[in-house]
Image 1 (cartoon, rainbow, N blue to C red):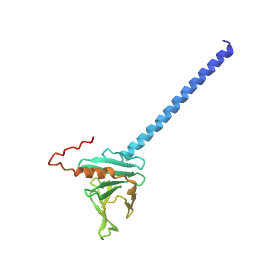
Image 2: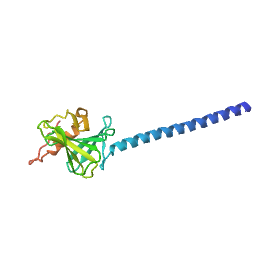
Image 3: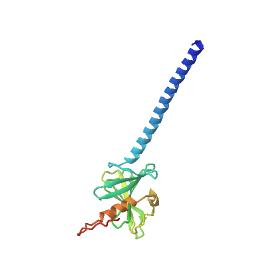
Image 4: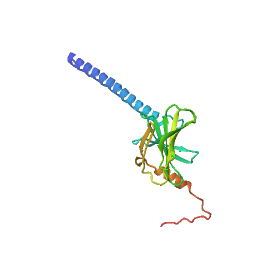
Length: 193
């Protein structure tokens, strides 16, 4: 092997080392990007909550959590830029209830009667939580439809949520399953041939 052959082998070795180094650098960078993405998603799931939430529909940013006290799940969506969170749950009659938490300092356990009124004429009231960290407002619709557009302008605290994008199937199923009653007589299973 002559000088030229040795030079070519050295060039190939250097090229392979550079290629390996580039692959390590690119792999590290892509790993870092994936880590940042997972941290961002985790932060959204934990946003202003002591409870653990999971994705119900990650694409639409809807989260879900089973609440033992209710015996069923609730949904929520975080609006970080507006600093509020929308919660939605179904009642025993399948009607929809929703609540919003506006994260702002307030006088603990106080009420703010807004200038807005319900159709009945009753004023809409914001309630400060016991920690003085958020104002809440809630509504319940009497019909069973979940296809709602909820918009409120509560003297500077505004929201707009289209519930037609939310999948309430799991919540409806939990209500149905909670109504199960044990049969007093054993049911003979029907065999299919």
